[in-house]
Structure formats: C-alpha cells, structure tokens
Image 1 (cartoon, rainbow, N blue to C red):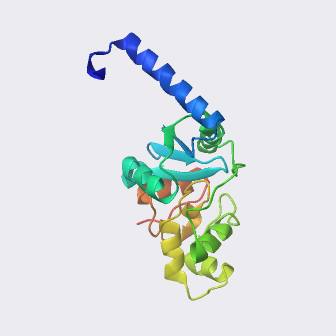
Image 2 (cartoon, rainbow, N blue to C red):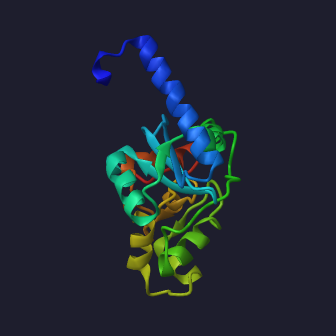
Length: 199
C-alpha cells in the first residue's frame, strides 16, 4: 500500500512518524529511542533509554541485529527518534572534530554486568590521549589475573567511544582487538595524538 506514495506522501509519513515518536516519548511508552549518525569510523547506531545512552554500535556489528538484541534484552518498545539522542550526536561530532576530550552524557549501563561492568568503570579512568594495557585494567578492576576477561569486556563494551575501550592495548603496545575493527581503533588513537605501533 505504501509503495505508491510519492515524495509528498513520504514527507507526510515522516511527520507522522515524528509525531508518533514524540507522543510515545511524552506518554513514557517509548523505552528505547535510536538513530544513526555518520562518523569517521563509519555509521554509528545510537540507542538510549530515558536513563541515558544505552548502546553505540559500529556498522560491522549489524545495526538490525543490535536492535533485535536490545528488543529482547531491554524492551521491544523501540522507535527511531533522533531528538533523545541530539546531545549524543553533538558530543560525538565535537569529539571527532578534536574539540571534546571527555563525554558528559548520562549512561545506562544495564547491558553490562558483573566483572564487565567493573572493567567499564575503570575504562573512563584512562585519560584522553593515553593508553593502558589489558593487564593494567585487570589490576585496576581488582583481578590482576583476569587479563583475558578484560579483553572480553572491552570487546563486548556496549558503549564504545564514549566508554573508551579503544585506549586499551596489549602489554607490548600493539593494538589488540576492537569491536569497530583495527582500522577504527588506530584512527581513534591517532585522533587523540597516540601514535599507533607499526603492524
């Protein structure tokens, strides 16, 4: 039925969608709002609850797959609504433009539990332009022998960029793994003035 709609009808649908999102948010029926933004590391999916930023996902993770997981783990009440994420998009733009060194956003960390959550708490202690080894983060999190678990926690970080797992590298200085891929990790470190080691 919608296939025959022209450009004017498309504008109408967009306005109706925006009104639906606004009404749902006002009535507290919208649990998770999402939007995508372009960035130097590719399109990013942003999702937020009323408590704060819930998820940042790289394109390689599969945005549809990520939304499906959020629907199962958090709530099926998900709707595209850019307004809730305006501040996130603005701070990411400032970060990529080199005008922001730390994010000032409310975070919803309900997707991280146990030791993973403890690791995330320590990642924000790694300052802009600095790195820490997986071993150092393990020690800071109170489990010096849990180096591999730190790697797993970084790989499953629901809020990359904002919670800076890209600043965690191997003890020999090499990059290690990254959810956005090694090129994205290298780019982010270079943006912060860290010279990535040669491969």
